[in-house]
Image (tube, rainbow, N blue to C red):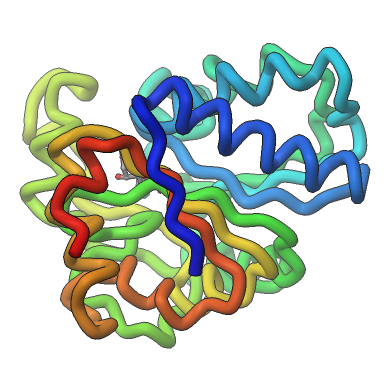
Length: 237
Ligand code: F6R
């Protein structure tokens, strides 16, 4: 496990983007697991800059999660987030972009399909929730969970209430690749910036791995790098 502490989020985002670019340079058809959220915005901005010298055409992407019941064309879908901040800005092939379909009529089958297809992620990018979640894997999720439908905690739904135009409009469920699914990625980079993430980061790294803090499972992965800014790292021992 590597922990890199950067001066600020711009430096952290840049560091992460350079690490990803290096992997794509080594393997032009890299299978890349991606996340959404505020932390990812500066990271995608930096990664897009590397597209001047790194070709993304053969890179295959799998996003971690999607809101249940939300169409990909909806402005609040995680797919729309990705289009806005990343996919529309670089030369990636549309057919190489993969997502869970939150509107699927058969959620069980949809999760099984994704579970199979995500077998072979070379590099998984993760953010971390203020409660230690990774993807939509909320505290208490068993460490052996596979791609599944999950109940989103009130705490996390509150964070999205502005975006959805009110707390009650935020979906109660999400689809997410599982913790076991994340752990089979060959390489993992977790990004966390800002004071609000300091507790979650500290609980993930200071304490023994336990399912109350989903990200603490990462201690057991053989190739994981945490890229933090000083504020997110402020409670590390
Ligand atoms: C979303 C995802 C989530 C976020 C986490 C942090 O695809 O994987 O686990 O990474 O909720 O979100 P922000 O960056 O908005 O604090």
